Length: 103
Image (cartoon, rainbow, N blue to C red; front, side, top):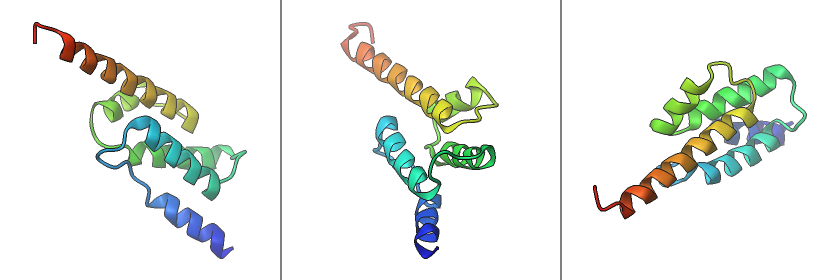
């Protein structure tokens, strides 16, 4: 029981760091979530984990996009998919802007 509480405490304190990209954060978060709340998770636990994930993302365009995408993101997998897609979209835009002579 003590180990389970320690894992849950560690999971509760997880946040995306300033220099951490979304794919790396997703892997780290999923590992911690699976240790604290092993799969399969019931609907209430899945909602708890998903809400924590959304709260742990850094503020900014990606987080805004995740929230505007669907107010009813009910699974961690769906929230991670949307954040990864938006992160990839932003990366492509940055690469294009760096190459563009019309900045």
